[in-house]
Image 1 (cartoon, rainbow, N blue to C red):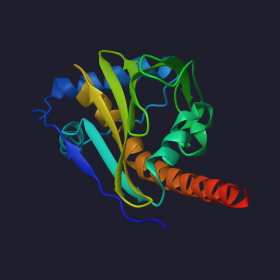
Image 2 (cartoon, helix red, strand yellow):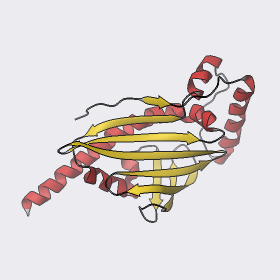
Image 3 (cartoon, one colour):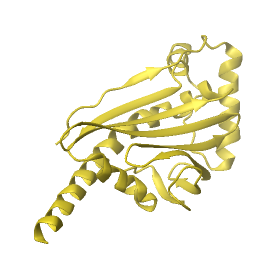
Image 4 (cartoon, rainbow, N blue to C red):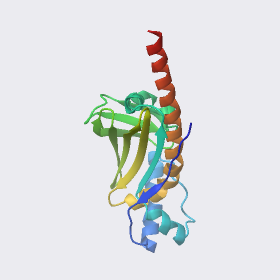
Length: 203
């Protein structure tokens, strides 16, 4: 069932100085009172910090044995996102189209306002969340690669003055969550296609 997935990391930032590490700890202290479960970075080594801070965009992909329209139908059911992304406690959006707004509550963070920057039916959509001096964008892309075969790509981008800091604070969670979410999305989407095919055959 599971085809393949791979990591790609992009972007580069200068090696962090001691003041950068102090900034990371300061941001952690600001986020915890707001409800974020921030990893403890008090004992970060310089080497680990340099590696983590160099990555601001995380990308993963998987091949799903169904059509893009079937997967996009799963995407459009915003209230059910938690079924394939277990980091989500609940989610809601007014209309699933470009410019739509809603809220999302993660299990490890506070309720956040969400905006749909772009929605292309059957192909892709992008969401945006605001962070202190940073913007987090999640992009979901569907590319047909054959009959009943779709390449699914999910990416998380931190953009802004504190992008490198947030990439360090939440990068480990993102690296674990992306492939797990894709595997569950694959299972749900392929099951949905089988159900649609069964209903079509019975009529």
